[in-house]
Image 1: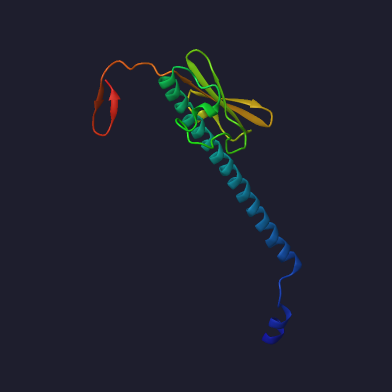
Image 2: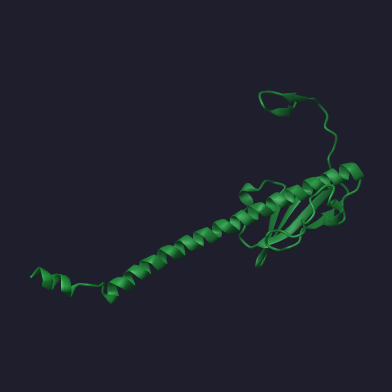
Length: 157
């Protein structure tokens, strides 16, 4: 009797195989969507760090030269490493300035950044499939007061 039972059920049925494949496909699609969202968010964070570095280099340029840089190439190589020109999304960084402020802007994929945790200096404007991300930095003004060091922290007194 046991030989008959084992010889009768040697393989999975088509319904069982289809059910297992459907569950695997569902799990992989959920994991894939989540991973893609995290990848886009990491690219957005990298773009914000690049914006901050370019703005800081622009402020340093202004403090040494006395004028704002007109294009990104003015900052290279003394104030910014060579090769910086496009963000990780492949869009260029654009500089614009007023009398006492430098604005660095670029385009990122729509939804890659969320305004909530980026700070007041950064603005995001939706432009359809892309978001325009801008960072504004004022000119460095002289700091009055004394710096005080207290247990690994340096702050203005």
